[in-house]
Each structure stands twice: as structure tokens, then as C-alpha cells.
Amino acid sequence: SKPQGMQLLWDSADHGVITSVESRTAIMLLLRREAKYGEGIQIVQKMEKKYQPLHPIIEAALEFRKHSMARNNIEVIKEFDEHLPQTLVDAGLLQEVFLNLIINAEASMSEVHGKGKLVIKTHNVEGKIIASFKDDGQGIREENMDKLFTPFFTTKDVGKGTGLGLSVCHGIIAEHGGRIYAESVYGHGATFFVELPVIKPQGYSELEDGEVADAEQERV
Image (cartoon, rainbow, N blue to C red; front, top):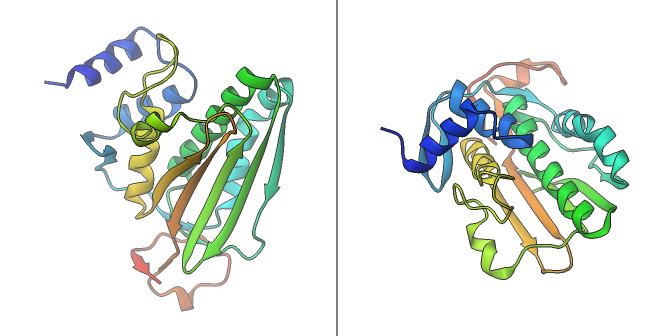
């Protein structure tokens, strides 16, 4: 039998209640993959990782929200590290993570200001890729910081969220061997960080630079 929260999710899916990014993350993962509950939602089916750059994945997520952000007067500033290394990732799942973070930031800024500035940065630190998403919205209350990635926790009004978006993101990043966390001072926006290990495929030296290849993981 499903946990109560899981049953509510499935019932919501059946009736078309779940919308926005949660229909792209929680429903996709629960219908295409088995899930188990722990700290966040963990993906137990093998992911389709390929050796590839991160920036096109972020750009693809931004493309989904381009028109919405334009309507909501959201300015996007990209500060990308031109020398960011490639790594082994599931592009489809990472896109869901980035899309979730972008939508959350957009909603926060629109609600508070009717406009906003989203700053997305990438850099490489000691064999780790870090992507940050900083908004100038309302921010997160201190008492909620430790609950952000807990399944079914949400600060949204009833009917506007299941509380699964960030929990699913946590599971996706954990399965990549990385971590996701946030920093915020309430009233001064929030910054979400996605940290991923730089992983090269076995036999990397035999691959031409820029080639995308399926491979087993081998940590740098």
C-alpha cells in the first residue's frame, strides 16, 4: 500500500490537480520510476547518464520559462564559467531540477515585486561544479530552512502545491552524488545551490573532446 501522502499524490494526478513543475517532476518520476522515501525522494531506477556540459541543460530549462518570465518582468543574468568541465549527468532529470528552481524563484519575485532579477552562476571548485540560482523575492523564513527538502512540506496555499518539487530535486541530485541546499535571509531573497561532482567516463583519454558518450562512472 502507498503512504498517505503518496496516495494523495496519485489521486491528485488522476484528477489533474497537480500543475506546474510538479507535474513535470513528481508525476514524471513516480510514473516512470519507482520511488522510496527517506531524506527527500530517492530515484532507484538506473539513470541515463551521459558525459556532457551543464550550460545547455540550464539554457533548456530557461527556454521553457522564457515567455513567462518576460510577461512577469523577470530579468535573467547569466554568469557562466566558460571553462566549466563536463561531467556524467542525466540531462533530462537535471533539467527538471533547474526548471523547478527557476519557477520557484519566478513565483517568489512576481508575488512580492511584480518583477525581479534572477542571477544564475556556474563555477568549478576543487573538482565540483556549482550552479547557483539567486532571486530577489521574499526569501525563506528561518524556521522553514530545514524543511525545504522534506516530502510534502510546502508553504503554498492549499491546492497550489504538493510539496514534492524540492524533495524530488533533492533525490535527483543525491543520485548524481551531489547536494542541493539553500541560503536565505527572509525579506532579502534566496539562493539555491546545486553541487555536482566532476566525473569523467572510463577511457576518457580515448574520447575526443566534446564527444557525448555513455559510460560507467569514474570519479576524478
